[in-house]
Amino acid sequence: MTESLAPASSATGRFRRDGTPPGERGATRARRGVTFAAAVLAALAAGACGGRVVVDGFEPPDGTTDGVGGSTSAGAPDPTGPGPGGSGGAPPIPPLVEQDLGEVTAGVPVPVYIPPGTLGFTAIAQIMTSAPSFDPIGIEAITDPDSRTFVADYTIPGTLASFFNQGIGSAAVPQTGAAAAAPLVPGTYWITVGDGGFGAPAAPVRLSVWRRQTLDGRFHGGKLDINAFIAGDAVSEEYMQRALRTAYQGFVGLDVGNVTVHRLGPEWGFIDEEMLPIVLEQTAAARGRPALNVIAVSQFGGRFADAAGATPSAPSVAVEHGTHLSGIVVTLFEEPEVDTVILRHELGHFSGLFHTTEFQASFADPLDDTLRCSDVLGQLERCPDYDNIMFPTGGDLSGTMTRQQTAIVQASAVYRGIVEDGGGAAAPLPAGGPPSPARGAPAPADPGQAGQGAAITPGDGAWAASLPPRAATLLRGHFCGHSAVAGADFFALLRAVGGADEGRLLAIGRDPGAPVHARARALAAAGRAAAASAAAPPARVLAELQALAADPSLPRRARLGAIQGVAAASPTASRALAVRLAGDPDSVVRRMATRAAR
Image (cartoon, rainbow, N blue to C red; front, top):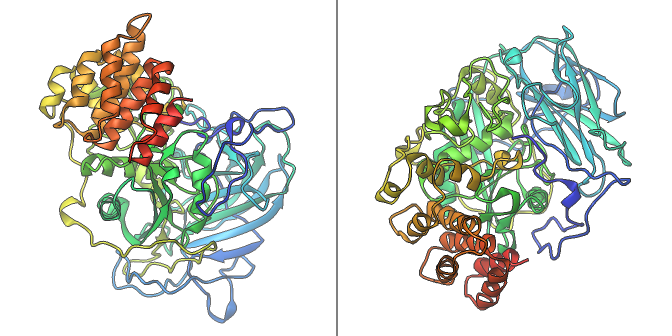
């Protein structure tokens, strides 16, 4: 789950951040001859004893500060009303405090004082350039006042974590069971920024720490603001708003606050590992801070093939927009129980959670109260953590969370906080960038869908009867981009559980009663199965995949799966299909066919 989701060795050249088409990919980026095939995912951070202080929607009286020193900046009035804790009112202390440590030197530990009442903090190291950098930077180490090490050499032992990324890196405390109790142990923490071993960055590096606090060091609720970016017609605005509110209203005790819809062009509808950091730059148009940016796309490809969601780091960054860590990217299936798990699972990563167990059996999260599975693929639904929201496939979609998992999300910097029982949430901090090209009014919450997702029965639906139950579960469930980047191959998983028969997969792809995303995955897998079954893929399989890809009566997602299947089975047939679809009225289908034929 924790290798780099967007290695700089495949990064694109300079792109505009206003949604204009990216054009052809730029040349491969390399720094001083060293390729940054890097990593990205969670760890730990700290707060500071000096520097500029910015507080979350809070302006102390008479121009005073919160006691740490420095100036303050206040957000706009909260348009969303009182928080879940009660009747509201301005917080008597700032729920979220930024301590700007300014320019720091890589490899030199920086002391950060964490006062009593702190639930958690997020450290952000950023290379200071006018446009987002692709050079590596991250959090090398974090130790607490008792000299306990939370992060060492950019990782947490026993996890797949690697805490550096392109131009910006982040880590948080808590992310381990040892630090998951609230409030944190007060005192001086030490944070070391580093370049991941790829050479010192050419530009200055800034370290900032965002510290979440309440009056008594306990969680009292808050509001999760969301910027929703829709690529082309990947999903309707109405469904996007409903899915977000269904997934996040009440999640870990938070209310949904402002939901703002932004539009991206259809050129952003297909995302692979090269395009991920570039599409995240488009969040420069986002409003308010902190806020979760959710980008909905039509299809994942490349190393993300068959994934339903991708988050660039655990934790990522909710307090600055337009960076390579500024959001999550999802494809929504318009099945509420599945989409709820996709959105919650990716928010879990965004806040700092790992998979409970990885497909690589020796790796798991660093929490004390989550269960582990000795063989995810072999046991799957028999795994003791199969019901957990952070199971690598989404599990049974019931969405269980442990106390420590919940505490980590509540301690993160992703929401506007409430500092006391009955208090109101802080107002948003303003965010720069151009105005949104389109905004939608918040849709009312759907109380009928606001709870946990319903569990999936492996044999749910007649379409699944021809497959082993585990194969049907994989086809319908969540597949996380972190697993893909860490080496898990969706087709290999499907084949291992007996689901790689091309005839059965084609039948599911044709079946209008099957979930459309299961049809798409089945058709893509049929091409892989055909390619593996003989020296030359069976002509009948290729012909059927080509016919399905060209059938305008099929749902777009199923057609995209068929295009991927053709590309997997035969590059020659894929090029012919691209020519055939050059005049297709669906621009996403045309673009996908052209990409697949490369």
